[in-house]
Image 1 (cartoon, protein in one colour):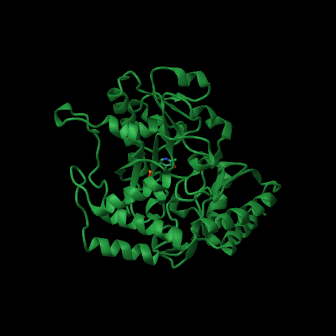
Image 2: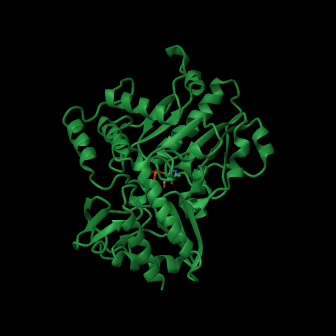
Image 3: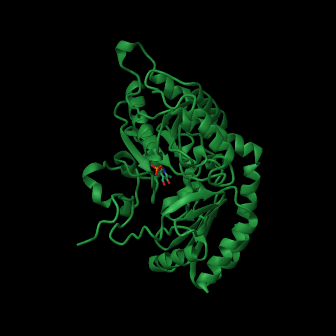
Length: 395
Ligand SMILES: Cc1ncc(COP(=O)(O)O)c(C=O)c1O
């Protein structure tokens, strides 16, 4: 019999062997987490690509506290609030999109995007456009629609009964088919595939096509790849962009599905026509989360965060050059401040991550790949300290 020590069931975690005494975080301070044993570890994975300006950034904490005392929540089903309005404008200005539809986690922004595409084509007179094209090794989240447009077997193999088939992108003639609603892509880097870099040519044909282009910036958005959004480095024109994770600086769950006018306009009509978008979540446009996001965007400017991303990327690039010739390393991959160091086996990935923790660096391997996706407020010495520890554990 397994002794039940806790009522908490953790995601993607084998609870039989999980030892809470080794991994209970009680405080976050800047780029560090502090565990219940009093150990301070560098959050080298930004708590799975969420933390941007460091933990508990005082300006974001203040914005959250002030908003919580003013308007904590009010539904956005048939109502609005000034924070959601301001954030929608900021996000549209940043991405050159026209409208923001709010959701909560990344996967819920993806669900909204898929449903938006399908309903859009019904209004646009091509209701047969219901199929989706995705990249090889795609990952877009864990809800049914998001799993359906994902590829990585480990995440979806149990759930064939709940998913539909998406078509892997290979041949450009696919894009001419009249049943394709949208092509969904991760721009530049596929984080969950172990920071796999997608060849730029893969995006070339996506510019001039009839299906919609959905760009998933949930992992890459808000500075991680060296530009505010990764798609800015590609010659593409998204019809829909999904953002999440770093949107609130990593403090609260919030995501958004950004759309162009032609999509938004297709949903307009008389009440009796029932053309409105049939999708929504309870906490969409939550004012506290929107206040955190606005404060995070201000922090980008005040702290010149994007300049720091360049410093992080450059220091990492130098260190990867050395690691690339280390016999323990199979491949290194980098897109700005999103870095994967692929070792020779998944077991080695686990060993190295555990050893790094003991050396004061918290990361989580993806199979054989050790990830380094640091908070964008990290200093260059912190970057070097991570790579020093990694080299030591590989030696
Ligand atoms: C590219 C991408 N899309 C979507 C998601 C799903 O986001 P969430 O875990 O917030 O649902 C993730 C999560 O890692 C992701 O990396």
